Image (cartoon, rainbow, N blue to C red):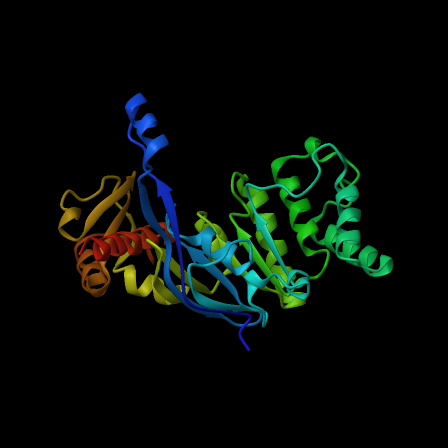
Length: 330
């Protein structure tokens, strides 16, 4: 049975539209004008046990709203959902004990207290047996490498260390589902890589299902084989990450190191020249023309080295968003 099953989920907000200035403020006291905003618009998908799924979209696409619906924080305007066999907005106690929601911009730890005190509070909230709690805490602090920091006030920790503590707090009750909303936001590359590794290891050892939103494509590439792309409240793509690249990444990047010290003057005839450094050039070439272009360059010039790569995931996702905007416009 799927861990998450969402069918035609929709969420509409009524937003007050106030005209500028004093006249607008006075008019709003007498008669308010509202505008309906559809944050989520008929979203349907399933997530199977043990999957790590990336939930991507531009700002305002409806990602966080969808996570809040699936965690039971808000009610949908229409549609249905089952999470771990429960209707999330009914907020059954048994349901709340089986998942965790981690939001990168929200803190659940007490700022002036050591993290270990907040962990003890979580033990009381979830009524965890002392031995089980201590065993789980030891395993998690070892996994995240913060065993010597748990007795330090949270306010004295770095941003990366605080996020590790937030994840430990979310995993203490051993949830079956982890909803992650921008878990690495604001972190440096080293901290991002560490958290990615820990989440990957935890998924492999415990089989916990993860649904992740992130603007860092490194998170997606490191953690997720499947991608859901949403924009304007609608799902545009649902499938393997590789299929996304093949469908929307219509070009390949050719990196060519020429033997001559200077680049050939007519390289632009073979493709779009997007970068150069000394005798090395980067060309963007249509996938269907890669073989022909390489053959022509190797016949014409002396080449030391050549590589063919897919475009960065960021550019592929940007193309998906552009297509989504074009669909909405029409």
